[in-house]
Length: 199
Image (cartoon, rainbow, N blue to C red):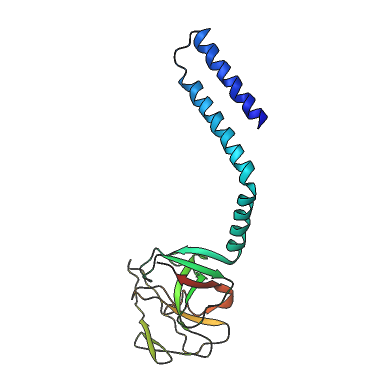
């Protein structure tokens, strides 16, 4: 604090010297430096009087970040834009799931995806003429190509979803989800957590 005050005083002396003794006319850079020093002094004083509040904020954020994260949806597969993800909590049926994309088809492997859990362990997956069902409920139709014209192979899994696995889907017909082999049934290990739509 004392150092900053001294620095500010020295800066004023330099400006005075440049204008009166040397005859310097353009003192704008020096004035900017003086303003910067004064702001630095005020910032230091503010931090000194409120440091406990800032420590509490940093610790609160650290606790929040250890359990939650925000996820932005940029695709058309889901209607929402911003989601809150509760990390380490496995989703249940009809909840949003955040997971690591298991393939490198179109998107890089490990990309964070958000989908809806349509099937949980014990549910029955069936397909007929490219139409997929979970417990008899329609969950989408598999396309032979993507929206960009790339060939994509539909998932050939049928039967009971095994323990520790999930069938996920999007609300858009072109969603990249469990209808296709590149996603398939997702394991617990692929899950980031349970998602909540914010808006």
